[in-house]
Length: 138
Image (cartoon, rainbow, N blue to C red):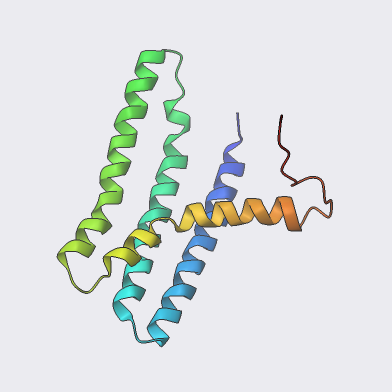
């Protein structure tokens, strides 16, 4: 099992990078004269980060001895998180102050940060050419 301190460090690392990315991209669109896109990206990123924190906080609670109870608990948690992620989409649909496409893109900031971090660690930071290489099995 992963120690709680490691999970908290991952939350802080990915959450901070996700919000920083959203603010940086949002400021870029604000400077270019697209305030609705700026608001949408930041709104989506905030909810994405909160969803990631919620997921990591409740992950250890899903691991139970009884498989049926664990499955039901996981399903309820998943449905609640999907409902939570729907909030910024509904807000972007209802209010013209937020760009819908930018809000949806903002919902993927944590995933983009995790993927970028993985690619950076495996391909650029390792110093080994073979570590991150893709291999095809024939």
